[in-house]
Length: 166
Ligand code: FES
Image (spheres, rainbow, N blue to C red):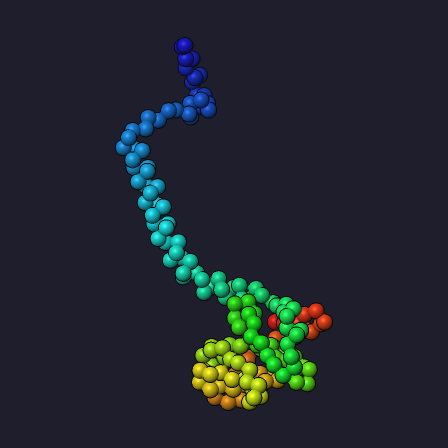
């Protein structure tokens, strides 16, 4: 079938843009090796990226959490405490003997160990270096901690305890 030459000065049509490009075996092998190399390096670099990005992702996940529902905590007896997760960090909920509730970050303000409620000594204690905090206010009262524990708001209903970022 004879082809008509395009008129002089005409732009190439779509049929001119699609041309068969002969693929040689070498071209196919190169493309295959390129894909395999890309997949290989992606397989190596992705875990490294995940490892390096994890602290930043955890920090943003922790910052995104503004409140935690604790349905089981309504059964917490007066004069006792529980450790729970607020985002990715530990927190401490205390139900005092006078039926008041308080919640603090359980991360020691000295070097970040997890603190615990010491019912017998009536304070919050950090076993790492002997830091102590007031059990009602979270104020640092002894040892190396430089500042009080971060405090949360606590709302108690019949169904649950809600701890909120202050
Ligand atoms: S980390 Fe708590 S007292 Fe040092």
